Amino acid sequence: MTGRARAPRSAALFALVSASAITALSGCGGGEDPDVGTNGVGKLPATKIERKAKAAAGDARAVRVHGSVTSKGQTYRLKMRLKSDGGIGEVSAKGGSTFQLLRVEHDLYLKAGTDFWAQHEGGEEPSKSDVSAAQKLKDKYVKVPPADPAYEQLSVFTDMEALLDGLLAMEGKREAGERGSVGDTSTIRVTAGGGRGGTVDVSLEGKPYPLRLQRAGGAGTVRLSDWNDGFTLHAPKQEETVDYGKSISSGGHTG
Image 1: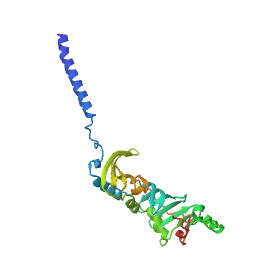
Image 2: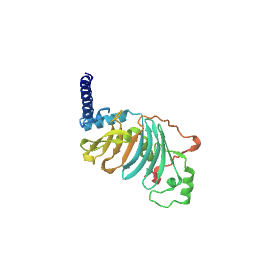
Image 3: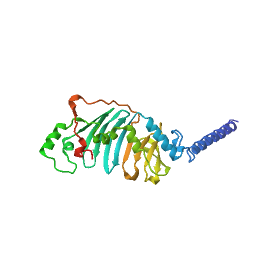
Image 4: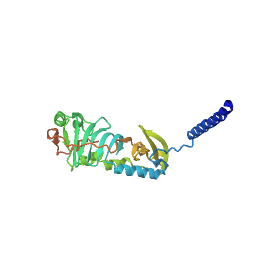
């Protein structure tokens, strides 16, 4: 009687284990929803993904921008931290010129080495007086007058709204592309004009921030990170500053 009692329990246990195994295997199959656990934008049409990414960027208070941008035939390498009332960071122009920018509200400052200040637009060799004057500006924060043409050209690198508007502009029909990742963050890609009009990789985690941009026509690739990470901007100390009323752009230093 003992043997006959065990058989039904063994059969029932085997059936239970087999059913659980089948259920587990079926859950690992190709029918799994790729949007489970995401912010859901991957289900949307490309135009709506782009719209949500721009809205998230527009609502953000701060961002870090890192990458290359080509504008008016000049390529710049950016390493900037931006927020609504200013920004700070480094800009390198093609040809080796590197300078630092700091904008606190309406006050814009530029800091660079002697070589930057001594160079001429036409590539001419600087004179001794040029070098002497440049040495006085070396590693000083030079306050750029708002009336100087260089102010508008340089301040765009520190203007979060204007820079993002330009970077996020794409041309052509939008299509939702591959899923991938930027760093450790899952993303969905939106392409414009078959990729020729630019691409943007949008976060599938949390807010749908744009995380990587490839600009139309090969005009640079940019990473956007540290969204909403606050930081403090301070005007430089008086002893570190030169109020340079002369036109900075006359020497062609800004490219």
